[in-house]
Amino acid sequence: MRKASGAASVKTGNAPAATRAHEVLGMRLKSLRLARRLSLRELAEATGTSASFISQLERGLTGASTASLNQMASALGVSVAMLFEESAAQNHGVLRRSERPSLPPSDGCRKMLLSRPPLSDMEVYVGEFDIGGSTGPDRYTHGDAHEMLVVLRGIVEVSLGEARHVLEEGDSIEYTTSTPHRSENIGSGRAEVMWIIAPPTSARAELEQYTAWKPLAAR
Image (tube, rainbow, N blue to C red):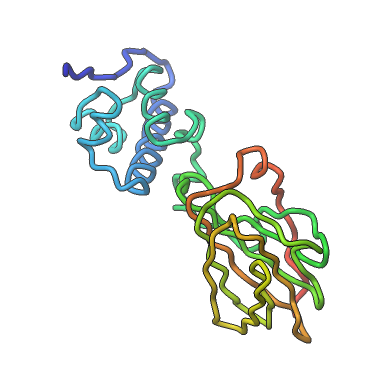
């Protein structure tokens, strides 16, 4: 297969800005590629370019055409805009507690999203339960993936079908998301859990409902 260089031959009167854009693109591209566990050669083959061109991009030595950027974004499972997000390139995926995207509290439970792009092969959430709080009055299902619940704090009862399991801090349980399930804080204080789901079962529209929240008062 003939390899295309993918480089853009665009002249600009703002060289420093162009250089910075190349640096951000390079850092972001490398971060995304490593997160996907792709070699330079594998990404080049997926985008119809060459390993040397990808290497130059990651080092901020060159730019890329719109067509090449679209191919790279598609291969990495992100939007073209995300290739130029400077904050993401510098933070290496750091998510501060105060910045966790959250759904509005419901049934005494606050659910927060931890996994964000470029992570796309799993979902990770944290749930905080008030005393007596739960995921809702009924058991629910979502897709047919593998889910693990880990109790980070407190005592939580997990209902799987007709079975009930009482888990304490450090305990975990695994099940398929097609099994009707429900979680409830049955302890005398706040409880906190983590859900890990692979592959993801939430649609993009569902994830976009999560918005930034302010952390709870110290407890």
